Amino acid sequence: MKSFLPFSALSYRNFRLFWFGQVISLTGTWMHSVGQGWLVLKLTDSPFYLGLVSSAGSMPILLFSLLGGVAADRFPKRKILLATQTILMFFVLVLAILVSTDIVTVWYVMTIAFFIGTIHAFDIPSRQSFLIEMVGKKNLLNAIALNSVAFNGARIIGPAVAGVIIGYFGLAACFYINALSFLALIIGLSKMQLNTADSRQSGGTGFVEEFKEGLKYIKGEPKVYTLIGFIALISFFGFPYIALLPIFARDILKIGATGLGLLMGSAGAGALIGAISLAVRGDFHRKGVLLAAAGIIFSTALLILSFSTNTWLSLSMLFLIGWGAINNIATANSLLQLTVPDNIRGRVMSVFTLMFLGMAAIGNLAVGSLANYVGTQAAVGIGAKFCLLGTILLLWRKPEILKL
Image 1 (cartoon, rainbow, N blue to C red):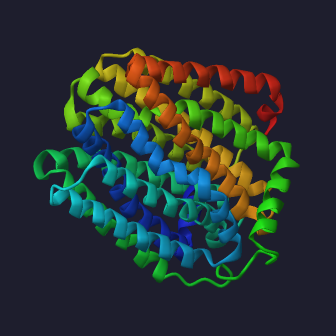
Image 2: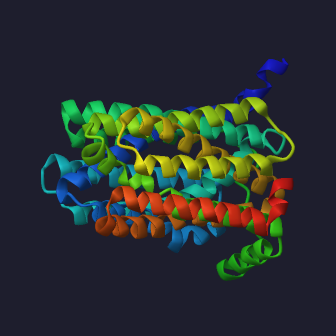
């Protein structure tokens, strides 16, 4: 029986429904990501607009994710997820229709990206804090790792399929397929049988009071705010490279839409291997050492990518970037969820989401704007240097992170 322990979370029926639904839905989401980037580049031919649209999609995380965390602690998480998935499907379908009727503009894309990001601000905190309700604390780390496997497995398949779909059927097909993919998770959520997940957890003292309670808890827990700060650093300086990959594919490496799928898929492959290794390894001591090593590897590989004009070298560095990113995110995620009390988990995870995705909104805009003036490679390289320096400074100022 021990050989099955790395995948023990899948023994829970509710988690199986959730996990397999996510595999399909997230594949569509990554197809959408490739399609959106290629669409914006086609409409504007500008790295600035690539960064701006990405920011429009992630900026709502800065604005609304803390409210999403309060909602996750107040209301049934499954019902929140059913609502968010249905609304997301609607917005993606609207974009598909706009593209297929050839009336889409970059402003339509940006507006829809903003609405999608707003829904994600409520979806993600509920999704993250829902895991423990499906599998319990004992299998939480395993569920997080398997969740990362689903995310990054889709990250490999989705971009690769999107590259082929764009080449043969056009951009609209990516968005139509993504709209259909939401049905898998909606059906899975509908079939769940939960005993306690639909119970109200927060004290009902009001949104403002509950919001303040969450921030007060984080401020009073050095372990929690150190982990969140570390993820904020990587997100702001490192993750904007994703929005600029279409430029690498078309102008630097000259490998087109299919090549863009390969670039994104390579980063996904590295993340998938990292996630599987975490799932197989299970719980272990000194997770902070892995967190620090992954941060340095991520930053160094990103720096090398910024200089690369060779496709194979770029693919190799993206693999390491994906591996480093997932080890940072999954390890920090599990440490946070195992630390915080049940009744405040949604709010803490909303702040984690704010730093993980919300800071990427500012980073996308900053690095995209910089790329418009100094070039894409130089902008990514500057971000990588700040990321590496920031990681080293954080470890110097907060050495206790290595003892986590």
